[in-house]
Amino acid sequence: MTRTVDVVVIGAGVAGLSTALGLAATRDVLLLSAGDGSTPWAQGGVSAAYGEDDPLDHARDTDIAGAGFCDLRNVRALVEEGPQRLAELIAQGARFDRDDDGSLSRTLEGGHGRSRIVHAGGDATGAEVHRALRSALQLTGVQTMDGRTIGLIKSDSGRIVGVLVETGTEITRIDARAVVLATGGVGNAYLASTNPPTVRGDGIALALRAGASVVDMEFVQFHPTALFTGETGGQLPLVTEAVRGEGAVLRDMHGRRIMAGRHPRADLAPRDVVAREVEATMRRDGSDHVWLDATSIAPDVLRQRFPTVLASCARIGVDLLSEQIPVAPAEHFLCGGIRTDRDGATDVPGLYAVGEVAATGVHGANRLASNSLLEGLVFGRRVATALTLDLPATDHGHSHELALNHDREPERVRAILTKYAGIRRDGAGLNAAADELEPLGTGPLATVARSVIAAATTRQDSRGCHWRSDYPHSDERWDEHIVVRLDKDDRPTTRQLLHATTQ
Ligand SMILES: Cc1cc2nc3c(=O)[nH]c(=O)nc-3n(C[C@H](O)[C@H](O)[C@H](O)COP(=O)(O)OP(=O)(O)OC[C@H]3O[C@@H](n4cnc5c(N)ncnc54)[C@H](O)[C@@H]3O)c2cc1C
Image (tube, rainbow, N blue to C red; front, side, top):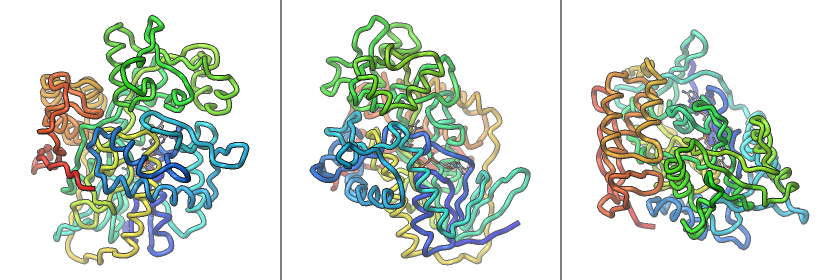
């Protein structure tokens, strides 16, 4: 079966929904989804600098958290266009929490110099953003379809002209003038992640297979405080950083504060710093978790602000109001991804990427908290604007299908990536990972894992969320981005690209 539309958007999270909404009035759009991604799970909020806050302060905090490795022009687009996108979301019906005087409540999270995180339902921001965007989409003529995209179609002239979608036992071919990948991160390539199972790096594998470049794949962010449930794999509940924003502190097995004296912002240091300290504490104490102590926060505040976290804690029999809760780091967010310009264009004509799967450089080497829902809103609109202004012409030439191979041993791939490309890495481990991945085929998970390993092996310094114990310092000789592409045998090759410092 074959269908034809102007634009196929793959992924129905904040990025895909924003893109589809922005195109609804001008283009014939089909939105594909393999189920809910990370968006409805987002807790803490959306960052936005408005009023007495200055977008340039937000940009500065973003670049500091990103270890000075951000694309500053794109960061400016993020922070300057963000408040407008947020206002439109509110106009579309999103209900954010408000103070008694009616103004939006704003809280603090790690790495932010001031309270600029707006939230909904206390700690259920993603669910509200998702609900509002989906409701708005229902009022448009955008068609939707459930199914997993398993391949892209490329014309002989090198343009992406469609997709292959698996629905049950059927495979549908959809021809399009442009394809937008909005497939989220790579959480399910690791054993334990805060991401749901649908988020497994398919977009990265599809883009690589189509000949596109991915970049900054070594910068995989680990959240320092996933709830330690005793499970060693699957999706772990998150304890949002906003709990620390309200005053909670991390403690080791002996009750000592972990972050005191380790960073000027202590428990609200950027995520990579906190995750590394937590990992080092666990290693030193031989424990599989540390403690988060929120008992100094008034119970009413905890009940009102963190109903989701309270419920997760209750499910494992701990009470956030009166006792310390067990937490441990888990894979959380991919800072790198498919290399795009500010309007989502990849280096393959007809192929675009947006949201967590894309790398515009706004996260640098480490994402600032609550910047990624904002990224989806801002860059989703930018891609839609670009494709409204200028949609590639239909390519009537011959084409060929680039279907993904099957992963033969997903659990093995996950175990290897988790063991060797977690918070702490070293050359010997990364080489072992490459060897162990070698016989495991060229399915999407194996391709994602190889890309992370290749980038992490190449980068011989430490910065942001890439930390190598054999090269523990940041080295300006590595002020270069690692770009990964696939060779003719579908194996990653890397090249280095100088980091642009222009604003
Ligand atoms: C627990 C948690 C808490 C978070 N808290 C915050 C927060 O407070 N603030 C913040 O800014 N960010 C937060 N984040 C990060 C943020 O939620 C994500 O980065 C963001 O939602 C990603 O949006 P996205 O649209 O790019 O992808 P996603 O929302 O992950 O959506 C991906 C979509 O792609 C689809 N898909 C994937 N592969 C295929 C395929 N092969 N075929 C078809 N469809 C496919 C999925 O089905 C899904 O619809 C959090 C993340 C998690 C997991």
